[in-house]
Image (cartoon, rainbow, N blue to C red; front, side):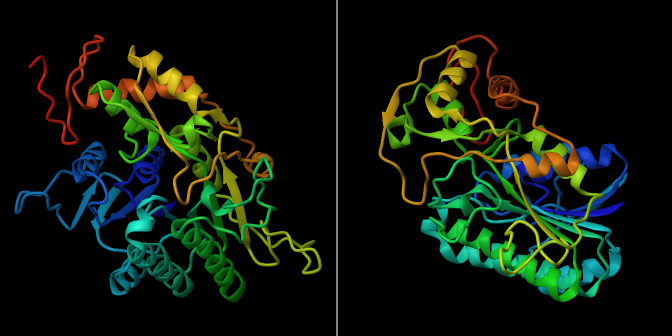
Length: 369
């Protein structure tokens, strides 16, 4: 298939594209390389895919580059003309929209960025899909949409009308927008509510990355809700496998759907919503204990209250996803942390011995000095 993946320089997008091109799909990747976190990490992810930083101006990638069956384009989702022209020229079979402004806490600081990227950018994808034939649109939602819901495990049949952050609200809006276009124009859309994704090449603003960096630098870690947290940590390989299995399975209308007892996860239109998580919540303190074990150090813990917009527990009900694609996540958190720590030490040039070495975000660690 010919597949567009947006957010290709991001964590999930990078891993998804790397797996798709290994299976000989023709893939176009799009990203604007914004500076929400270190752009060096994003450039290095692209380098792993064969896209090398341009030489005309420092930190500027060439606008378009093709390596084998992968082509990279640097562009903003918010640029309607670029997106329309891209769909017109390429004739995509499938679009996997993973581009978004992420981060619950950052949405409290810069709300407009979330509207531009997550709402306007997604609208441009939907409009382009409307005008050009598309077999399947898969897009990233988030477990954050469950908001104030405390019924566990979180089910796609639950009400999600009480978001706790603007980020969550934009993801709920994406689901509503997708349903509208599925209804009006027959576009098959699948929304994926990701649950705390982690692993090698992860985002520096996520807990595992922050904890690892702080522990190695002998700094305290911030532990919110005084450690009384649980998360459905989901390893990146399991996320990618779920996405790949969904690619050739666009949703069809649910013939038994009724407005008298509406099922939020399906529709009379070709529309589906799935949770994609490990479905085995881990206590945050157990997660930290395992990280300490892998690093060989005890962390100094700064116990703090629950952050605005955050929730104390997440837990994904993935039964409907298992039935649909015959796949359950395979990687437990201990193995996942081990793989992340191994990558982190290699990427940031940390000796495999248990000696502490100061590092910074730009891979400029001064080894042994």
